[in-house]
Structures are given as C-alpha cells and as structure tokens.
Length: 82
Image (cartoon, rainbow, N blue to C red; front, side, top):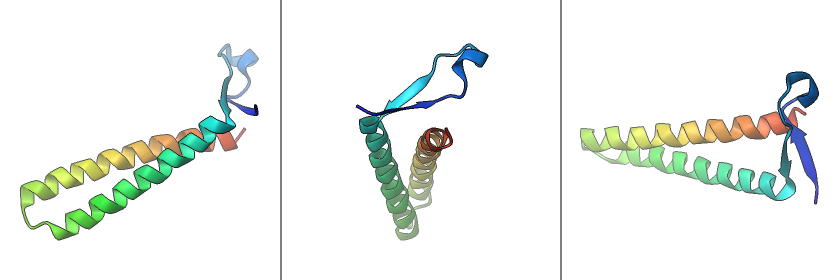
C-alpha cells in the first residue's frame, strides 16, 4: 500500500504526520468530481427557475458545494505540494 505524507516536517512542528493512501487520494478525486458536477447542476438550475425564493435556495446550495469543492481541493493540493 502506497502512502504519501502531508503536513510538512512533523518533528519540527510537533504535529503528527498525516498520510493519504492511494485509495484515499482516489476517493478524494472522486468526491471532487461529484462536487464539480453538483456545482454545474446548481448553476443550470439557477438559470432555469423563475421563482426568486427558489433561486436563492439553489444559489445557497451551489455556494455550499463550492465550499466543499474548495476544501477538498486544498487537501489535494497540500498532498501534491509535499
């Protein structure tokens, strides 16, 4: 099983070293794809609905998925920066 360390120099910072297995990285990439699809769907729905309240709900859902996507991307990028 391959693992990759993230989190920098654990000895210098006193933190434990976090590692992602290949399977975890694959799962992270899959989840990124799912969040990206959800964002695209919400954008489409925002443009299709006429009701202002419904547009607000869909916009909120899109923003939530964008937040998830950004969080996952930060984890993935921290992995590749090591």
